[in-house]
Length: 310
Image 1 (cartoon, rainbow, N blue to C red):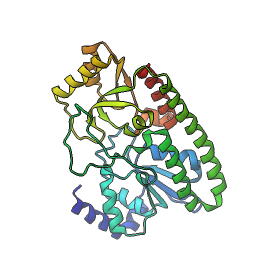
Image 2: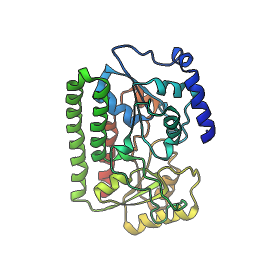
Image 3: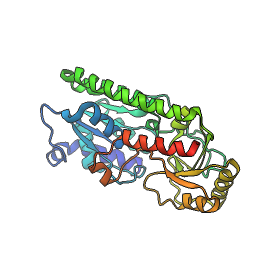
Image 4: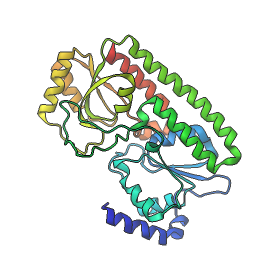
């Protein structure tokens, strides 16, 4: 949706808000505030902190591509009537800027990128993409366990603001969750203490800048994390193949919902293995229905990282 069109849509939502509220997906109750989030990491963090004490809605459906999401008018009206709205920020959430600008200060909103120290997306050697005069901040802030801890603490503060009578319970839940995240972080750091390899190769988009920075990993990848490219140049694939060979790497990574075509091409050319490193952007409907969590996915990532660095 173009910026001007988004503004018009938001204005219409404000005019028609009572109509949309009547047919919204979630019925608000006096004792359960509504929290709307854009993607899976926020959803999972909040359900761990708040449990069933909030009406929790995730806008991007399980199994859907995150980067192409554009909210409908009814979804925007739900956001405007929510008690708390949580989004990532950054390039993918530009539509939120229009929503906030149109609605002024009336929306209780939290951006994950405001809760951590961000770094800019960058083009590593061999990566396919265009260098920008003003690079965008990398929005995949939750991929580092240390950042996840900061985000969870920030979300706890926001939830205490809408559930003041349950603040003690929320902070207890948060403390318990942070302890698990700290253990996860320590486990990642422990893997790197005796690492044979400190270089990793991603056979497609690269959403793990924060994790690699924390662990001291050098990375090479086919595409930036938010790239809209669907085809990867032969020169980029050749560069990644040469890197695997020169570094004698045991394998390459692909991310969730990938067709694994490039990873398999590199593996066929070098004899290396392929492993999933899940960015937690979103999960399949099957995983969502099964209750898979951020911790589950990151613990799987930990096991696959062990294979890559040893």
